[in-house]
Length: 107
Image 1: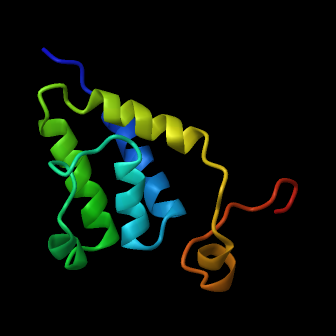
Image 2: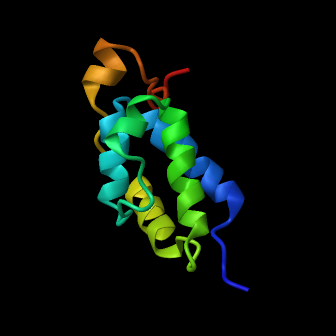
């Protein structure tokens, strides 16, 4: 049996992706930058009709269908999320589409 990336970690990764990216194109670009191929990504035509959530689900589902269960891509995605440090103020502060965590010491 092939090793599968733990579901609870996958779920947290999905939540993180949706929490730091608003435009669909940024979500897809994030996956491309983490070694997801065109086989795992929705085409432009398909993604235009999908919600952000559906895009993330689509990619994760396709990664799990790989013979290696997408283990390399999941590891790359997790590493990118752990090291993520840029939170676009346009989407967080100006448009208020994404919610930033409270600043340390602020309740």
